[in-house]
Length: 186
Length: 431
Image (cartoon, rainbow over all chains, first blue to last red; front, side, top):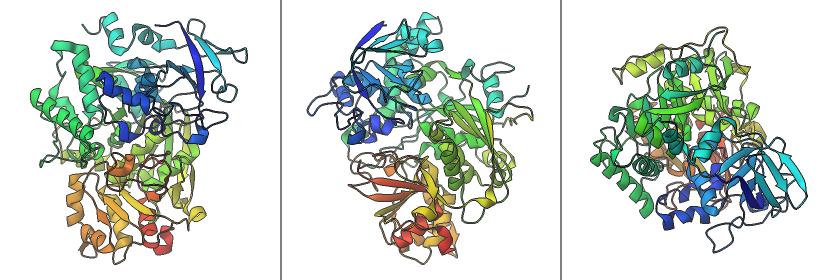
């Protein structure tokens, strides 16, 4: 597990649902074929209304025209990130786009489980609302050992809630690696 | 201290005498369900992780209902169904309901009930967020992703955090112009789309226990729209009789203790309800039909696991009988059984199917269809900046297809009344 994640932040609003993260018409591509599965990266966040894409200004594409991954590494969301359907394709699409972690005030249950159990992106809960104090394109650094987010652009540091019970699964890589490590499965 | 129904079922499923909210437990799963969108990646993960030794933990407990992208020329979607078909053949999965055969059932959550997989007191996991529908049978049911499903497929087990429960009591009698959809929209408006996150929504009261099985499923179906882990209604005689007709498995009826702990209790009087809608673009953006009536529509849609059951079509037919729709109106029976029932069930001596045909509706084949948009050739899919009123469950941006479309969610009564005028209409104006 990487102990620090550095990169540019992409900021979104509250209640980003799985239809916005990856619209249902795209759920037909293979998730195991390396080339075909990159289409999930291409269409990640493609149903976010333009004015809400890349806050506070908006109208910032998450994936640039003609590309199949994003320039951003960390998403800053608000409350109830990942609400809606059970599609594991949602955190998978964000991973394929190049996202390492999503920091939000709260997460929807199935999205949260899928992020962790599938080992796609780290879902971190912030202690305070961050999507109105961090801007898209800010340089951020996530310190996993300290549960902290540093915004190098504004020189501010934010405390995050420890990952708690799910940390061993994240450290192992995914649910299967965790189960092997703990002797649950061979 | 007592326990709720949900806590009792999770205690039984984890081999404990009691569990408390917040505790992580490993559960023994009674049934695992998947479909054509999440089945193929689930199988792929299961094969990769368990390797050559990959074995389905219990074939009788694994059910596959292709239902999402069925009637499409999309090659990727058809490949998914082909993957399920060859998997079922290779591993001898008896509970596979193949497309294009008499076994095809349609939308999984309704088919689970009809085919006798919903048994009070049991634990069901499915690779679909609306798996919470089955909670209407006094059982624990919830949605998971592909990785969790692949883990269950190989081990029969999964971890879960015991949820706190919220109790919603509906006393009194439902007015004739109100359906379960209005009740759950009210709940969503009150607690919002994350008011139920990591929680159980339990429903009780006279108005609930006087409902049909179909209507109860509308309530538990939309528990996920509040972010809930599960929705649940204590099983009664109505449920027991329904199950007995479809399964020889015995029901274990759990009841919440009088001193069970609830995070919060909500009390409603059914008599005081008026028709509601969820406005674009969220199921908790709730308002009265009175406040939005007159909004011009381009399409009406009655279908899905939420609003495509027999009771929904009976409600709609009462308005559509002898009338013609003003805007394109789609009738999509959730299951093939419902599709057969609408040919048999009558209003004033005329079959529902005939009423819909004569009213000028498009009656489509059973599947999830345009509820979630789907491939471009999906029947009823939202185009451009359409304004749609629908009996489905979500109206997030782009949910029914076009990102520019606007979707209002409402009861089958409100949708049918609106179909007759081409604008959002209060069903009371037609009763």
